[in-house]
Image (cartoon, rainbow, N blue to C red; front, side, top):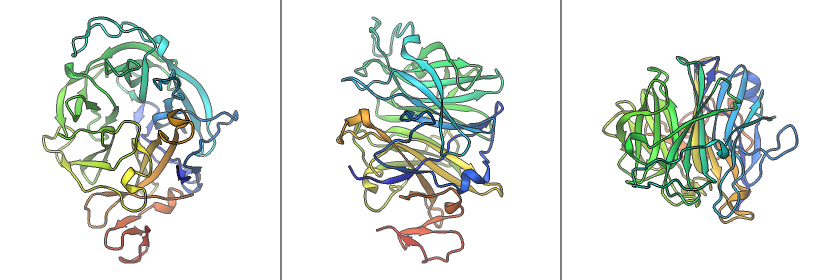
Length: 377
């Protein structure tokens, strides 16, 4: 595997029980969060940071990173969900274990596949995400719940009064009476509605609005029509987007980007051109999407931060030695989609106002004229 320098940034901003725009202190914007691809950062206790398939939220002046523990065993399962916090996106403190598979009970009673017997533990926990429900004043944890062999794909739901947990097991769900593989959740900043977005066995990315208590779905409202996994959702320029990958398991592949001009429940998600160019762009820089955050600067400008996992399927140590990749996702000049850009040792402030210049095949930074882009070779 190639050693690629990457950077950790941030994800959905939730503070004091309300979804906030994601404004952070200047120190976090100007500090390089350098992380070599193929390595993992150490937390403040000197242990490897394990937060795979996760996301970040802004809460009480800190960044909180929620993800799964190391994948172990022949089935490559994680045993629990970790929570980390940081003041500057560089130093991370382990705040504890939020949830473990041992807490799961009653799974499944019956599935859309017709399974009637409950498979024995252990259970698979993947792609955990948290949202704060302001109405019920609690944090909700969602994750892909399954057997080690992916036989009964569902969504696990747990709740807590604190972002760090411990989270109390509530139930498993089969969204809209269907199974669910890779998943994420998204809260619309305008309406406050929350959505479950997941990969379905009928070869599509499906979108369902969550019930107001966020413990179940209220029905399927849209789908992309193309089989994909690793969904990550963002909103820009009045449109919604789903970034995803093709169906190749742990192996990397070209990224996908879908666009909706009519909200999350659109009946016409449009597939855009591949959002990456240059070396390794055809395999998403050897990573798979897990979350995208819209960072808002103090002057109101925005920058999209893409988070991915480098699963390391063919590298030393295999998937158990997986790492992380964070990159800027830039608008293409002229408004024709977005470009995932490789960057090394970068800062949030460095890419403020930057766009992808398609003609020059490079990044045009703030203040540069068209054609003055830094080319991607």
